[in-house]
Image (cartoon, rainbow, N blue to C red; front, side):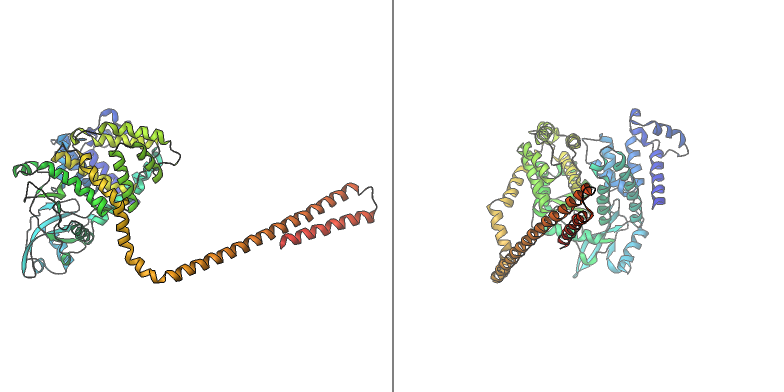
Length: 546
């Protein structure tokens, strides 16, 4: 493993210098050893010298592999943080990664089915429709129940697991160094974050898991006019092959095409927010890879637009405590109740219990107050997050690895919102939804729902209630008797200890007196005193042993 880490570290360093990525940073930012490194790596021949800085950055990420490609995909949605040239180049990572050749794809599929491609599909398109970081997609025809269907076939890149494993090993190495040497290393918990990221990536390689995720998501939005999830043909899915319905939609990033068909961009942006909050708070099951390459818009009903989601390899889940905590925080933010936000952070254990709530409240107010009553176009969540992280650092707030996917998805949502309808009022769109959700959780409807959900269980246990009550009373009675017996035993033990101390103390006093008067009394008298001391000592020890 150590050799693998060193080999991958060497490859990363080599690509860094070959693509001259050091030029992306101001000279003053580079440590002396990095500047000196330019002179000792001259054997790394520069590549794509004629390309722009943005193009070289994108090409370097492609060569570094899927872990870095996904990083670039996330960056491509953050046009508020990147120059336009870099955002446009990184957008190419979403479906323009160099594909594997047809023979490799065919071999993967035939090994998965144990039969030839022609025996499974009526036709198969050799040219891939899209090529992503860990898999690529081909069009095909498939007959099911005498009906020919247009489908897409997703196939995992051969050997990609070893590449990801090597990258994650290097990331774990860096995470360990960061945790050890950075001032905030332990608070940020980088090793746990990398471990969570590793699990996410390897889950994405299991297409049977992705098929199950797609089926669950489709069931959650069955009959919805906000999100359509393609049909998954589970009988034809394997661990490295997935077959699903072929959809006809406009990529959400193709703004010109959306506007050309008369799409209601404001409604589309609002629905993006609604779909996200529905997945998180209603279903506790959300699509966590919502970059523009995975989101399409239906060509039907442009005045009432509907999203189409694909690629369900990465999903996130939240437990009831996380959901309630997040919803309460969102509502407190929307209502500008920063005191409530501070108290929730302390109550959840995310910040130490001895945190000064007043100071924490003021710090949160300083960061968040300026962003309210502004359209999305005027809000830089990147700057807000940076300021919040700086605030959290001051108050020793710990990073929560279970929410990393949710944070990444929020960044994607912001990026999509900026592209679709920059004037979207995120607070106005989300606040009614969260208020309704909280009412369902803590209002009269929540009580009635819990009663209905638990009624069958209570009905089943009702005949057993008399016996359960009797057994409970018997247990309480036995506990009371045992407690009384224990109290009596403790009392007796304390009395014995007191008597033992009395006899041992008497023995000590007699022995001391005998030592002081041994020159002034006769031998028989001294012998009597010492004998009495010995008897008292033995008596005290005997009582102590009982």
